[in-house]
Length: 343
Picture 1 (tube, rainbow, N blue to C red):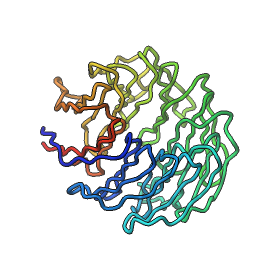
Picture 2: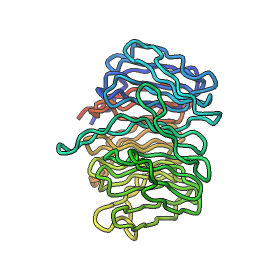
Picture 3: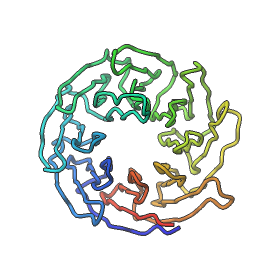
Picture 4: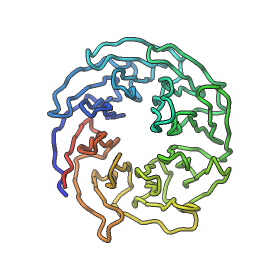
């Protein structure tokens, strides 16, 4: 396998978020200083530089049809943009709290299920809001007990999970009622669903990983990590879960009764892992560590390491393009690298 630099660009500050357009033709890169740059994936040409948020941008999210880009910022607002024209189209002001998490409702993947109406979930402070593509606030949920720290849509799009110190709430996106709440007596840094919707997983402050089986009303727990767990990624099948939380990326087998009591596959770095990302439709796993090392793995192989890249600064975000051809890497020093994966 070959991993080569396709192009590189520089932002004016720390790369706080990255997002590929659904067709993979554009990469949105947000600087913590506030600006948002849209780059052509083919050659890295700057298509548009969006104003973003004056006090700093925190998150970007593409509408599933690619016609709207949403950004959230420290100014307490969500802004909607026309990415083709590079124009601002609407603003939703959600209060004084930072908008730290954004995600569009996923489209249904089942042929017998109609696609749900487009909704953008936005977490600001203790409050979760649902917005339309026009920026109108469709619903605001009751405030959580503490600041919302992570968010993840159920793959079917029927509900959205939000985490806070002390638990997770699962809100119905159409009826706006709490489907379930799960207590967890510590801080939660990350949430992810398995692609089949079977598992809901949190990465935690304590440090540990916690798993829920919502359909069976069961939960499982894995502790013993070196540090708090902020990095989670499922493979396309929903069987394999990659986690950070130390100098090794851990790969857990979630088949059957799940990973509790099983030994994980350990993929070693020389310093703390700071990002993990499985491909969207294939089996490669990308991991990055705080010494600037990026590694590509085939975890199922006896010799899993496929490629290594040394970067001048640690990765802050990594994201595979929709077709898995490119891997985008944002760095702490403001560099954006797009690597091409072949073979």
